[in-house]
Length: 395
Image (cartoon, rainbow, N blue to C red; front, side):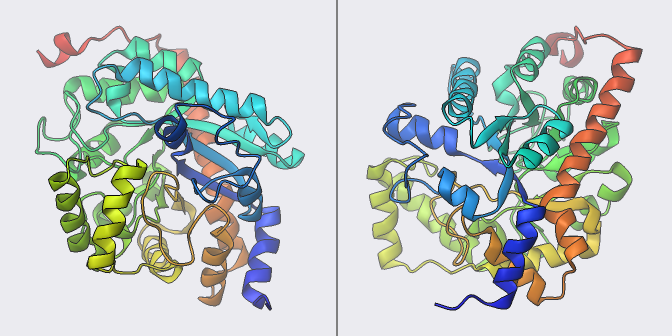
């Protein structure tokens, strides 16, 4: 099989400027599939029968840094200890594979890992439910290495509205704004994926540090509430932040939105949560897909979103957040973590320059974390840890 010149050029570029991916749910997949038995899902071995991710495919995909999501479901009564288990999983993965993975807490760590030929491993908490309305818990997660927190997941938290829940506080409450300020002081990136557009705007009004969207696409191209409206994308240059395009078919292809609603209803009818990726649940999903062929997103579909996001926000404010191992279905050509070169090749074919692609894959994400660190130093010199409580600020 011959390799296209664009694919060869994509791999050459990624060898120098590897992908910083904003969101991979491998730790949660390990929780669900094998209860964190890392021998049963040894990522040093081929895991293509079970996972989107293993070490060889990360290498093949040109991944140089990964934000591992330490996600837990928002309906768990014990979200904080479950989040700690997720953090422990990431730490164990790094300890288990020291030649391939390096723990990264700073932008300098990311660059050091790249120089060493290792994959910088960072962590992001997916949902403010993981701090249980406690700024002390937020600081604890930061101390354990968490470098971004998504303010909500699919459900509201008491202080912030989710994109996929009914409006609660109209964006951010007073305590929610204090959460953002404390994240700025710590140097923890404010992640606005999953939040309502009102929350996005309130966070941008509050923050003094760059924000990220760890895995979101453009609402102008796919009208799903999980995506970013143009007016918010337009604010990223002044903020300094970035939106990292996701590969989730129902967030990138309009035809997939209605299909997904029907598939989710089918899961509920069979007694499964729509995010359940257990073998039993996936059997139900696949049976539904056989009866109702899924609209097919492709690498070109994702590239359309990047074209739009570059036009609206600018090339300095975009990145990649695939959401691998957190999704049941993937676009054609973006099946797993080995497939990033296919997206880069598509962008090369569209005339993206090497300079622009280096920003997309590596430079923007490193710059944003470095800028958050700068803000942290400034804020820490002005004030100490916040002692605010949700009961006091929100009544």
